[in-house]
Picture 1: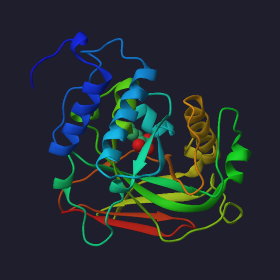
Picture 2 (picture 1 turned 90 degrees about the vertical axis):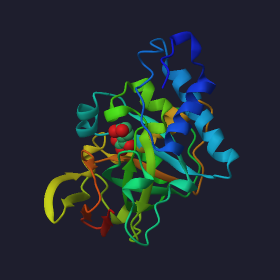
Picture 3 (picture 1 turned 90 degrees about the horizontal axis):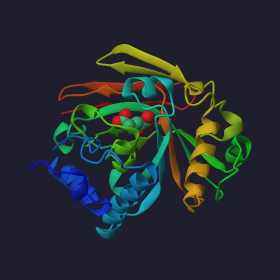
Picture 4 (picture 1 turned 135 degrees about the vertical axis):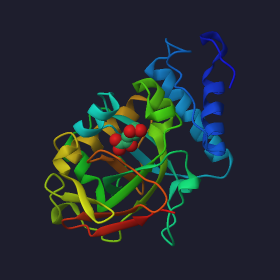
Length: 265
Ligand code: OOG
């Protein structure tokens, strides 16, 4: 790849480059060296341009994901504030058969709590209690993240532009309502090849997952975007991500939301 200078990058060319890396399953250096003045607002513009490219290919918005909502993730990735990014239907992981490492650049997998919305949520000013009132169902989820940046090394702006490392996701088959599940107490146990490697409760997500849902509504609201009834919302990883390779078998066991199994070839 040719070296470029700050002045040669635009929001549009960065968006095109990120989609090219995704299509060709290649990583690249982050943009922070080439474009040190890239600000968060422009990074979200780039993210929206990558969404526009997915939609132009026939993709549909299914909701949003949060990233970097837990201390575990923030510390590991050296980025200390949550971000919001788009989910489109092409990101739904097929549940039949093993996932393929070759469909990704360098996949890592992480456990999530997921909600669907039964009412619109429009920030700013949404409180965690109001956010919970808009929840239709609560599900377990597993996200495959696949940063377009080499070794997952990025700044806050880089990862915002890269749609929060979005790759693919799968939701569990057990759906509960908010009164049935204490989101802060819901636990997950992460197993890699049969060995428990990590555990967390929902409280790992900003103290309470409702805080993350409200934060998503408020971050989107600041950009004039309403969260819509019917959207799926991934609330952010509860634990560090697990790197996978062909032959890895993962299991994520939740207290009340069932188990999700994912093997890799
Ligand atoms: C950024 C995306 C993190 C989460 O749930 O925290 C994320 C990354 O770690 O590559 O999706």
